[in-house]
Image (cartoon, rainbow, N blue to C red; front, side, top):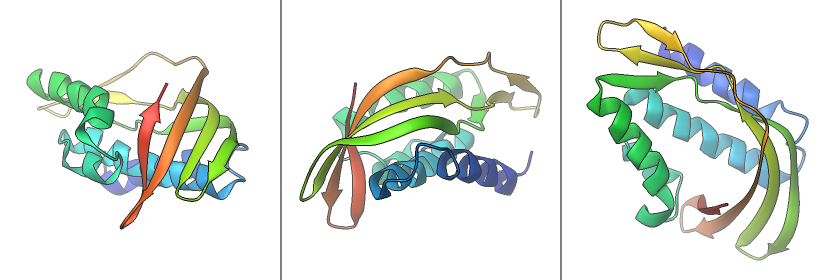
Length: 142
């Protein structure tokens, strides 16, 4: 599976969802693309451009480590948003209420064999974005 296809799928799934009309929601979509790149590459390095600090990144870092430890990577990992609204805004900080589903995702082993992950159900999350020197990062997901 080509990396360009994975990136294109992630971009289309996150940026063209009906819940991405607010600028912060589109920013979250762009961060989701970087997150998908981390999983596809089985490396947590791209997560530095997604999360504000190591604590915020730890759940994703742990998942990357777990799959990498089994000789696998996750391909796809796009978030399909059905709604995204700014619940609170102040300069340099936005709290978003999001309902999203994990899009088509495959666990790919070292031989290239891909196994589709089960379909996800919609999940409601509150995501806090903060502005840092070189853009926006996820500070908290609950």
